[in-house]
Amino acid sequence: MTQARSQQPIPGATLARLPGYLRVLAELSADGTHTVSSDQLAHACGVHPAQLRRDLSSLGSYGTRGVGYDVDTLRAEIGDEIGWTHDWPVVIVGLGNLGSALAGHAGFSARGFRVVALIDADPAREGELLHGHRIQPMERLAEVVALDHPAIGVIATPVAEAQKVCDALVAAGITSVLNFAPTTLTVPPQVTVRTVDLGLELQILAYHAQVSQDPRQAVVDPTSGGASRASLQA
Amino acid sequence: MTQARSQQPIPGATLARLPGYLRVLAELSADGTHTVSSDQLAHACGVHPAQLRRDLSSLGSYGTRGVGYDVDTLRAEIGDEIGWTHDWPVVIVGLGNLGSALAGHAGFSARGFRVVALIDADPAREGELLHGHRIQPMERLAEVVALDHPAIGVIATPVAEAQKVCDALVAAGITSVLNFAPTTLTVPPQVTVRTVDLGLELQILAYHAQVSQDPRQAVVDPTSGGASRASLQA
DNA sequence: TAGTGTGAACCGGTTCACAGCT
DNA sequence: AGCTGTGAACCGGTTCACACTA
Image 1 (tube, each protein chain N blue to C red):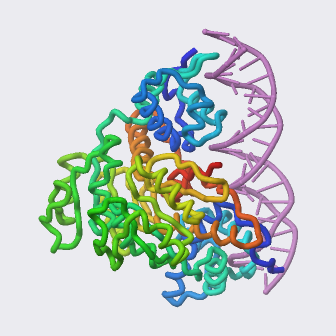
Image 2: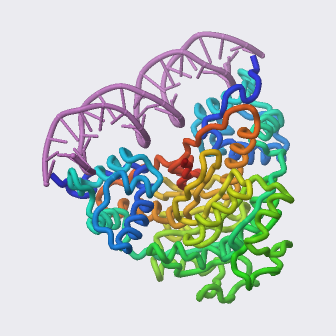
Image 3: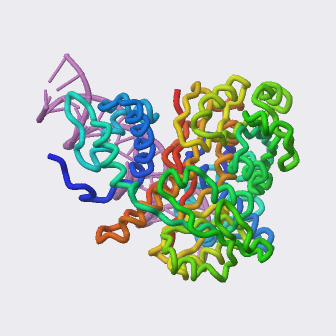
């Protein structure tokens, strides 16, 4: 029996893999493939077949025993589950190298995310046109959020400003924050923060490189399903 | 008894948190603080005190019961353990918005990573000066690696080129790859790959936003210590 | 007394192995 | 015959609770 969708929340580890499945399914669909087995799909996604089946079963039984999964059905189910269809407006604060790159990042728009505003604290940047948007000052933040109702705020400022900017985002009504400043942000409990620390990623690779060139054994990385730290705090 | 460092490899989840501890310790040291308790430090890092103690104990006993940890001793121990002191040359391939931002990313140089070469497949970009380096064509990759011996390669190309670039990096002798293309890379077993998918980060936030505005309950995110997927495969 | 270090319980997530369905 | 879906074992990681020590 096919269980109703989202009967119970999806495990976080599974959730982090679903978009990966979705991407491969899209490729299969484009190739004209209509059916995949868990072995095929798992191999293409770089995960264990049993794990794939377990992941998919947590959103319901959409496979056919003895056959496999229908590519388009599965796409629709996963896409619906993770909000693929939804339009997600996003506001970006801090437009240095990284922020500017994010503003034009193809991987965002391709997945239903739409940049609706760019904010920077530097008065000299005000009015500058970047990827089709004019940079606006911090004072306009509340106004922008009230107008377009972005659900997600991206912080790409230096560490020194990150907490202040985060507070402003929260005050404006944002409840989801993607933080690229390598610092711990403090937020009220209803706000979700994910921190992506690019330096940390290199650091972890460096550690592996260091131990593997030593006589000692390199550790197999158990942080799969999360190469960066997410902090969620009260 | 203080155990010898690296008697056994550090758990991956712990490893991902050490740089965070190090950053906070650096701030404390700058403030002239000489001693911290696990409660204080854990709170500043956004982790549970017991977890911090467990993490630190896995590199040896550097605390004093009834007192706490000596800030500078701990800094030295953690820094030494994760290769903070080491100089890590890095080569970046793909200099679109994201690659360009990474080339100038302050968070890299601040942690001992040094960009030694920029490579782009587009002949029109060849020779362009970016953050103090001239962009070089793909054909020069092997040469560049032979010269500066970068241990780490960063892939910031479109998905379509990522596997090809990865193969070239591996062929040139690179054993650690940080991949920003949202795709699964296939590499020989001795090569470590970490994939950071920026779109995925937003996707996960979007899911949380979606379920929390539903009557249903939002899941608490268990992918802490890994906001992105790392793929490591044979 | 205050705070570390750690045995032991706990918990989420992964993998195995096979029952059950087509 | 073949492949899904899942109970159950397993495993790494987290948290509790307290013995131990400065």
